Amino acid sequence: MEAIAEPLSFRRVLKLRDLIFYGIIIIQPTAPMPVFGVVSQEARGHVVTAVLIAMVAMLFTAVSYGRMAQAFPSAGSAYSYVGAAFHPGLGFLAGWSIILDYLLNPVICTVWCSKAAQNFLPGVPYWVLALFFAALFTWLNLRGIETSAEVNRWMTIGMSVVIVLFLGTVVYYLMHQSGLTGASFSRPFYDPKTFSFPLLSAGTAIAVLTYIGFDSVSTLSEEVENPRRNVLLATVLTCLITGVLASVEVYAAQLVWPDWQHYPDVDTAFVFVAGRAGGAWLFAVVNLTLLIATVGSGFGSQLAAARLLYSMGRDNVIPRRFFGVLDATSRIPRNNVLLSGLLAVIGSLSLSYETGAELLNFGAFIAFMGVNLAAFNHYCLRLGDRRWSAWFPPLAGFGVCLFIWLHLSVRAKTAGAIWLAAGIAYGAVRGNFRRAAPAT
Image 1 (tube, rainbow, N blue to C red):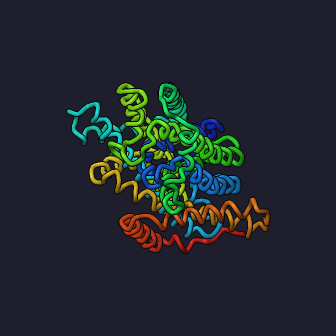
Image 2: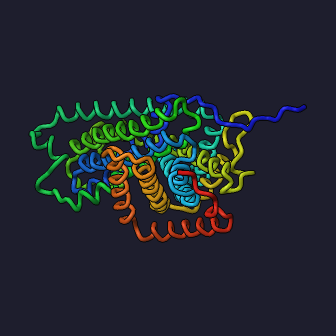
Image 3: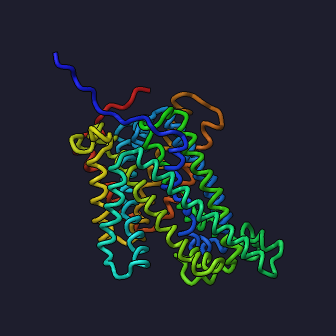
């Protein structure tokens, strides 16, 4: 009698350090640098305070992700958690929302990398560079999860070296400046002349972008050793490490350039800060580092998108024959990686960076709100845990995410609503809302 082949599954090869490196590389060790100028102007120079408040806020949601990974260690992240806590139909909508985030991140990373590369290669057409970077993201992911983990480690180490170099240069620069007082060193945290809580809140809403991507850690739950422990630790530690590192970076930048009203270019303000502290060579190094960081974020988010699509395809809420298949050799969802790469090319040739980033936030925060409510429902209502550590983090996380989502632009809300409506229509036709709810 011929033996029945066992279905393919992921290999559990990732350790806690691999998850942390993965989370940090998706968020980027240089995450506050691109938004530094915008947050500085919105918060009237209180970038450090905004970044720290955002860290506390996102830690609540990180705890909810980690605790749901303890209860349901599967690859689907928000899709799996909301579906398990409430109903598969709601899980499908959470998954559909976060797909928008995961698929758009490689798009905007391709756009940014291509334009940044043109600063070094001005004679190369934009579309050629877009094809190159989308292909690079795809090739790295087709190499398998072990290769991705190794690349993550080396990229994180390399960017950390540049950050240390920047901080060392800042210290040397400040040592040779006259007129610095105690107030100069406390002003980045609180300046009584410009402080305004409403303006700080607006800056904090933008500073939250520093942490976007931490949830991707949970998409690797089926490839992690001891996922019930390591996913929670990695998710929280990723947010914490990012927050501490980001605070140090922006604090140093504000000491070098305290005049938040006069950046040569708001979007690239941090690069000009580096140029003031170290000259043209540091200007170029930071430019290159941001390019490398965005490459890491691009292929890391493509990896997360492939895992989420696989989880939904495996459950047949999207076509299983295409999305729910693993490559027999590499054990990766090859079809999903290739699809994400193709969409990165198409999107990078049709969307601007700003438009893609706005749409990304719509899906991300709907999923964040869903996971926070799922954690509250599962632990507090279903299991009857009345401790403050069970109910406070998810409710606080939900409130912060709702506040940010309500303050998205009208364009982002309109386009996101169309995407969500399409998901509802598709789910209704496919029967995803008629699936049985999980037993409580």
